[in-house]
Image (tube, rainbow, N blue to C red):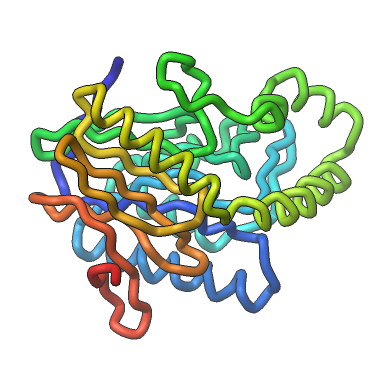
Length: 257
């Protein structure tokens, strides 16, 4: 298994759900993400996105959704200066082709193992994993929506304008179901078991929209919460990893409370 070494400060964020709200809220999320990108570039901080940057995303061969364009333009220049941004897709934005790679992202659809200050860090979105040995099975609906056969059939039946709009409203409906204590409990228990039974030291993910940091004798689990609401993320500061918040009024990262 490939393990990448992180040799600079880095933030890990998820669940911005760009395009999932009113125009006013979407513009606020975009502006705050761009502020965060500016901050990271000034301070030479890398970025990893752990899924659901978008509320809906389905690339057709010649059409991409018209959402988050300012953010993606800013990421393109960020990636040229800072190197590829890791983007592990979530259950709302895994219908990709090659658009993100062309903008300088390192795109993954499952998980990524990182070596951070001597610690092994597992990064994923949190909706499930295809590898049965990792014991986090995806719900049947998520497996269906990620399958190449489904995507091919869907895009054959629905032209881009119709297909993207259907996905937009479907994504808004499913997002309303994602913030609940059952999913929180499931991820907490899986993270605890995985940390206890492997050489992994940290697990970082999002998906259930509830920010939290849990310390065990055998490792640390951090759920990133949401950028769109909590503005929370994990921050590696060259010595430790902890849950922090982006504070727009201060234009800085602060410990999460």
